[in-house]
Image 1 (cartoon, rainbow, N blue to C red):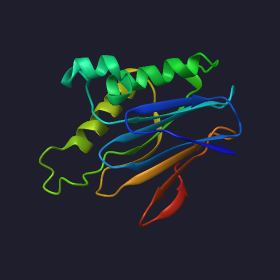
Image 2 (cartoon, rainbow, N blue to C red):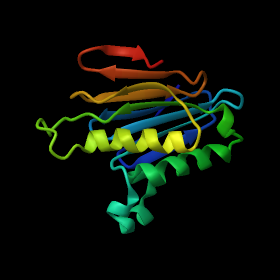
Image 3 (cartoon, rainbow, N blue to C red):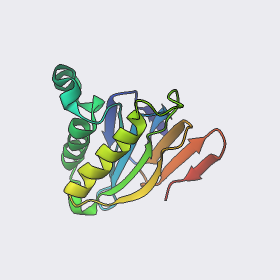
Image 4 (cartoon, rainbow, N blue to C red):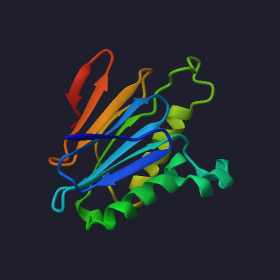
Length: 161
């Protein structure tokens, strides 16, 4: 098994059954894991902000930074490996309020709203979710099975279903 790390404002797609995609320390950011069980293609996105209109120049340089540009890019990259939108399983984690105890900026909540709205508009269900609250999360997607695992400091490791 080879572990492929996805950084902040980054994504990776794989069809290699030996790969495990992982992104660490999701705070207000959101990790989006997608998987097509027929062709065994999966991807993982770690986006920071809800909308590319916040900084169009950065969105042009790095579309994975934003929900509205990163998620379509993630799906299109999976399609290149034969994935089909109708079969895609979607799971998300993150959107916490870590350094914003008063919830003044609400970046985590805005990210959650943006991702839900985007999937709703595109007729896709989020089949597994662990969002909000005030703790960091790490998520893993196993390309061989499509299983997504969530790791937190207070709950340890568990499958995200």
